[in-house]
Figure 1 (cartoon, rainbow, N blue to C red):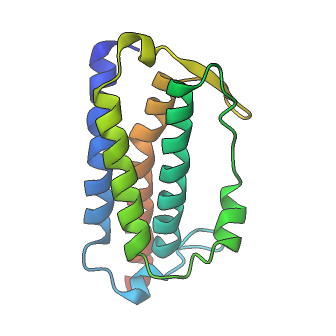
Figure 2 (spheres, one colour):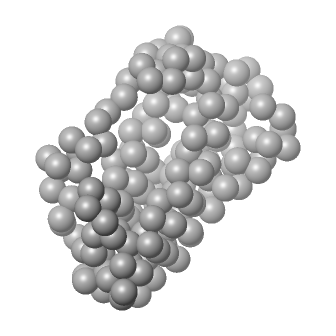
Length: 157
């Protein structure tokens, strides 16, 4: 990954929290619980997913940097949504998402060129480098912010 692209991804990664918080601003419980279509997540479920995903991704990144060639593992997000009570209040999950991302952004700011080149494996992605990780998570929150907007709009339709 070029330095310019890495910088762009880092900025997008940092902006993800703001994007999600903006998408949630003023949301009512009705909007948080609106299911935009059968099988699609509500805004509330998306926030809980973001917290779980961010905490998982933070550990993945740390393992890539600290361990030699780790298998960073995967998880079944649908099972998490079913079993981890995604109907609960969003405040703590939004905070977990925010602070996991802030802590990770601080870590990313300090990586050396050698640390950026570290890699392991992921069961679904195969070879999985720090740069690959960043490419995924730079977009992740932005994509879900758009889903939150659609879910909220479905409550108003």
